Image (cartoon, rainbow, N blue to C red; front, side, top):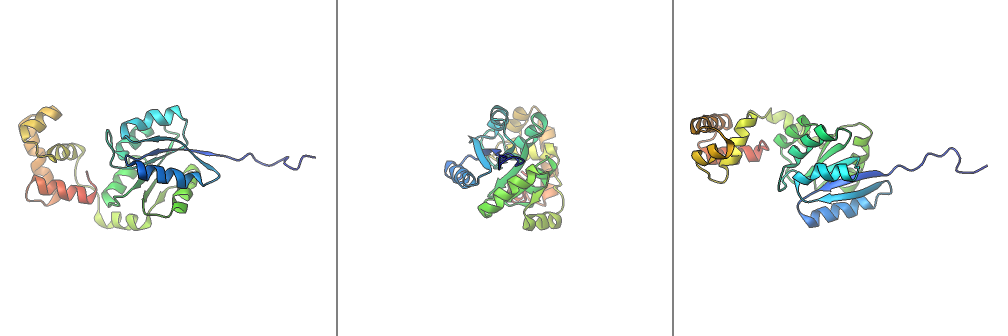
Amino acid sequence: MNDLQGEQPAVTIRVLLAEDQSMVREALATLLGLEADIDVVAQVARGDEVVAAAREHAVDVALLDIEMPGMTGIDAATLLRKELPGVKVVIVTTFGRPGYLRRAMEQGADAFLVKDAPAAQLADAVRRVLAGEKVIDPTLAALALSEGADPLTGREREVLRAAADGSVNAEIAKALHLSEGTVRNYLSTAIQKTGARNRSEAVRIAREKGWL
């Protein structure tokens, strides 16, 4: 009788890495490549390349940074949920901000880890999300509970992002196809909700909280 009869075939987890810093991306790929059951089959440097790469390479798990050109990792997670709902999403970021955690989980992320976590923890998270678990950095989870929910609406966040580079109301209105009065109202509300004195401070506070 064949000694291997009855044994289950090894399962390899196909992983996509989305990270705009090449050194970090390559380091993560190398570390994950040391795991016998994990295969990094695709790497991208832009958020707007995530869905196409995930589809082309038939990935099981997508590891996404948050701040990337083209599209944030959180927005990419939203698109993945819509286009490829079977793909598990792990957010791996330098920015351990409670607001990011809340938004990521609201958009369907399966795990949220910071980049200084041990490599073994990341590999374990990949396996656990594929098994249907949610994996969240415990320190961030506690902070998210203490911070409370993001008070900004989607439109207020959009207007604040547009104001971040110093654009005036007319420029923001044109870019977002809104009236100047509407932009002014959104900015005023965002300033009030963040407890800021002006739009620049509102942008800073919202970024620090992870709301942008």
